[in-house]
Image 1: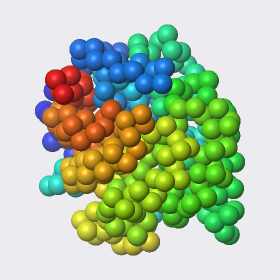
Image 2: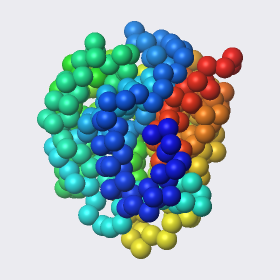
Image 3: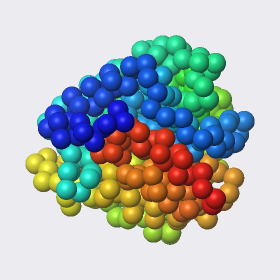
Image 4: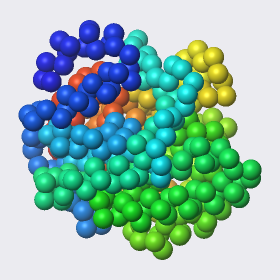
Length: 346
């Protein structure tokens, strides 16, 4: 894998979903990429061995956790995890590389093997076997169930019941939770994130069920696909901040998808990640930090394509950084290189 650049001309010719599945298979091979120097980060009783992790969507079903540990990652977001299996959106294509932009477009729609299978996969990696790798469980509502809701009230009930079930079953296996209501690939999901009753009807019950380390994943734009301003972001954060321990910023961008991808089904435009997203992700992180204070955990995500990009997120106010699209273009060795870059004096 340290010769990833030699394989890239072939990899980019493969269908993206097939290439991703192949990459997960390769990561299961028992060899190590690199061990970045130790750079412990402590938060709420957890010790992250370094500040760089693998974002949600990369290992949706916890099938190559040992491989991610061998990449040198400090943590991994598994998921999005659903209560039952789901094949995702049926409309094709569902994923594409934006080669000239160094971006990725997807509208997969929460593909998942389901809670039962993923919990078993997580349980196989005991804390003693992880070598310090922190597990974050990214959880969300099942799109098939959510689509049957006839009102926002009913949708909120479904979200609450399913996230409670996920939380209770995954608590023995993960170190923290990330609530994902910001994917652009499930219609109506982002409007629930901005609903004023979300904190009381969903987040508070999760707290009471024992989710004492809970983050919220935010989109890069509001439900009208407009970039966040300090005012609009503050209005959304107001109810959420008291019921969560921090945020992941950001998810993929629908606004960029509509601008840069010729989508034949505009009702499901998908989201863009990678290089095109970085400037907006950094801007949102910069807006968030003064709004949420120093005590909340802030994870930056979106467009880390080079080691120095990870450091930019720390300088913008993030505590930790996640990578996904960057590994597609620069190879999995980017994780260790980025972790090393983050050790430089801040």
